[in-house]
Amino acid sequence: MPAPKPESISLYRLIHQDNLEILLRRGALHAPNFTPDDGLSYKTIHNPNIQKSRNSFNIPCGPKGTCHDYVPFYFGPLAPMLLQLHTGQVKGYTDKQSHLIYLVANFQQFAAAGLNWAFSDGHGIARFTSWYASVDNLNKVDWNTVPIRY
Image (cartoon, rainbow, N blue to C red; front, side):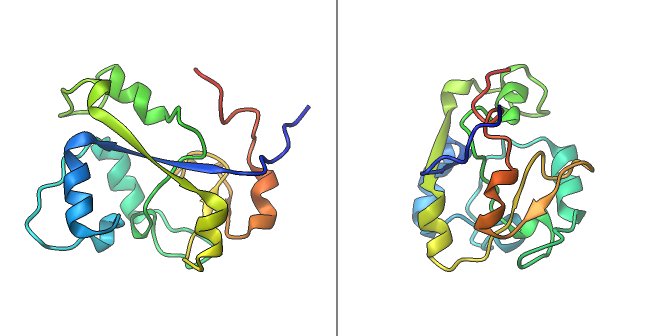
């Protein structure tokens, strides 16, 4: 039986702990295509091949653009990239999971703030993933799968 959409939805952004000071100094999270050229060195934890694909993957709804025009968040705390980092599948990442932290936001407050956004019902660059830009489509997310640990 499908799980209903939660009344309150948390959004999770995984970052390296060394980046927290940078985010505080900048005063904001920035999408890759809009990162200030301020000389601050951001420690990447992302898979370079996936990032290359995201830079050219077009979002078909909402404000549109590419994945790199957005700051990505997950609906659940068990992000697939967390497993990749833990198992050494991210080239250049040698720190432990204990060096990672989640920034957590409330979806309803985010949506009510009038910011531009879109969400997918799966991995952002997967061909079978659908994209949405309306809170009315949150029922398209498989809320049974979001908290699963695998």
